[in-house]
Amino acid sequence: MSHDTTNPHEPVAPEPEAADEVGTEELTEAPQAGEGSTEQGVNGDIEPVAAAMAEAFAVEEAAPDTSGLRPVGEATYGPPDPSTESVQGPDNRIQITATSSYPWRVHCSLLITANDGSKWIGTGWFNGPKSIITAGHCVFIHAPGTQRHGWVRSVEVMPGRNGASLPCGKFVVPRAQLRSVHGWTSSPNHEYDYGAMVLTEPKGNQTGWLGFANWSDATLNGKTLNMSGYPGDKPTGTQWYHWSGVASLSARKVHYTLDTAGGQSGGGVYVIKDGGRYAVAIHAYGGSGSNSGTRINKPVFDNLKLWKG
Image (cartoon, rainbow, N blue to C red; front, side, top):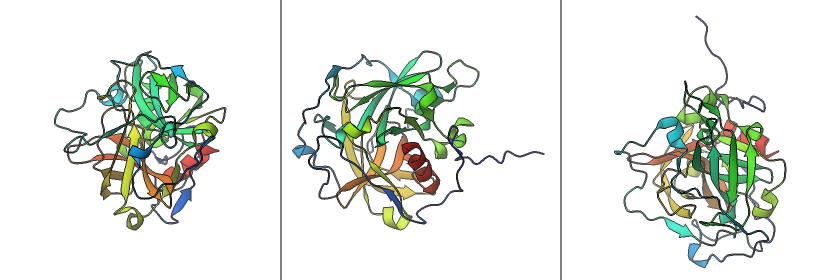
């Protein structure tokens, strides 16, 4: 009997990588605040939301109408189980209105056009000048036997969207510039649910980007996790932020009590360390006791670095 020996972390478009390792080298890639920012660092473990001020940005556009669109996770998994709650206890999310400021402009509202022409919403985040990280199910939909199945047609990216306003503009990423890994495109495996958009122009030089890190359990446990994104249960196209502790860790997943909702799939879950922001997971799933994302272990880290270029 034959066995599929393909590495589940093998990048579908770029090149293969090593077996899973977590925190063996405590690897990090530094963040960047982008053009026009005078302050990148922050004191403490959470974002100073009340002090955030909107910055003047060169581009101001109107957002497309995404009202009524469903979160892209439903394109693969169907409507959520009513018994599964993504808001853990009281809803403590905070709306971000200064979205043209760093780090809020790093987070992108995604308008996803599937292979069958249907449209969906998701979230992504810059990890470098020419790359945006998101969930695997934002770029490759599992719907076998339907035209929807496979790589999406395109993703319209809106960095720092604030409802109907696009202070940082928008751009479209075509199918040819999408990336994921074999572990996701071969089957809808939660542990490999991550992907990327590789850009032809350095859009991130204006917005800035999050750093990212492969840290051990000992380093991550006890840390405060932060996330901002575009949930579908709030007013259309608005950005919402929350923070929480680590609930549990495994080699390929991080579980947390961050309040989330469908539409935030692909958001960066990050830690503030020494004044910089380092993603440690890519948000993808809600749950009844905790929510979770794909952990940035060494193979994920290596792919994010590869896609960053």
